[in-house]
Image: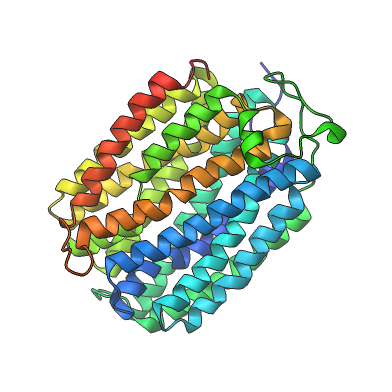
Length: 416
């Protein structure tokens, strides 16, 4: 038995990045989950526009993740790209205070997600470089737990703002939204400071999974050629993740579903807090469990939970049912999100992980645009097309989750 607990053996970078994500998500979640309500209740936009905004924002992040990850591989530097990404998002958020059209919201979301695109792949590669393979699941699980605990805290603060300004109201007001935006600036600035002062650059650990390249030998070819050099199991994983994500529309639609089923603004905030509490509580244990029993079982289990929960959203009749299901939805995130990133580190040589994380995050984000557009159209339609109603996008997501789970089991090699 080791003299130190697994948590105490983690590199300081893991703790610094976890703290950064904690503070960033306090800031982000104070306003992110109010945005669809702001669009629907204040600006009176339809679900198709909500889907368009979320889709474009996530696609922007995804395209940048590919290049940012590959750039971090070529430079051998992760930290300062990560700092730049968090800084851009911090600068963008305050402009939501002045938003009076959906185009303005789109512009701010675009800049915010651009910052996320710059930081995500280098950050994940920095975490992977700071730990050994026996602690990958724990480290990424802890990072997700910090991220999600920050989301819980941010939602709690936002709920207090809603309670103080419009308790019991069925719709969000502009004044409440603006107060939340102003309050979100403080933790965003603190996050950048913690990252800048607390993290340090770490040389990539050599991986036995594939031959490594020295700095002078690193390939400087295009992304397509870079993809060809990656492990076949990673490429199979990328394929099934892309399919799964096509049915994983923005959670904005779940928020609108909850409101449509009768929850007040304050109840919606409490529902979101329940989700994040479950997510935060289970991320670390599930990540550590994946170190022992393998990643595939956890990811497939998470996708199965997702499919069942989305089927429940489609069939839900009351607001409390949506609330309960959204809490269970947190188990999917805990079992799949951090574990998927640990799996990538298992499959990809250290010197190519920035590229791999960029491609993974790009696959997830690029599907956000069609996924959210399809969800909006299935729900409400556009023009003469009236759509199939609020249940349709959730039936669609459940079906694709089942198909992706089967393909994952068959196509991604056994092992971790």
